[in-house]
Image (tube, rainbow, N blue to C red; front, side, top):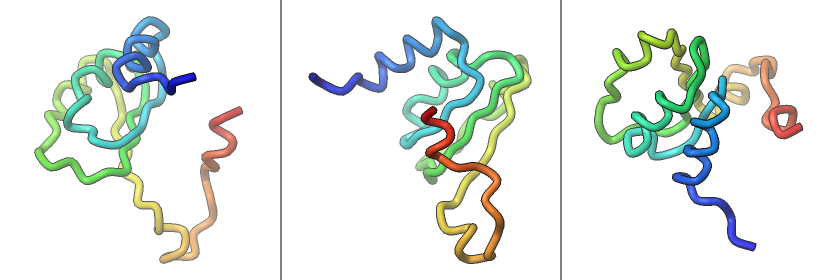
Length: 89
């Protein structure tokens, strides 16, 4: 069985108005992500977009933008506030 494509996942998300989204190559999918997210949703990104994101597009739906760095906990000995395994349940 083939894994669903990013386009397929985005179209499913748009039909259910997701509250959270994350991924890679954000600049390639930014408009679709904004459309798919529900009002007052959250967009978390871990990548470094090659081109600037037009974050003004987030404002009409009050979507928050969150940056993540995968080594923050180790570098600063920070307590985990989120566990990826919990998001999969």
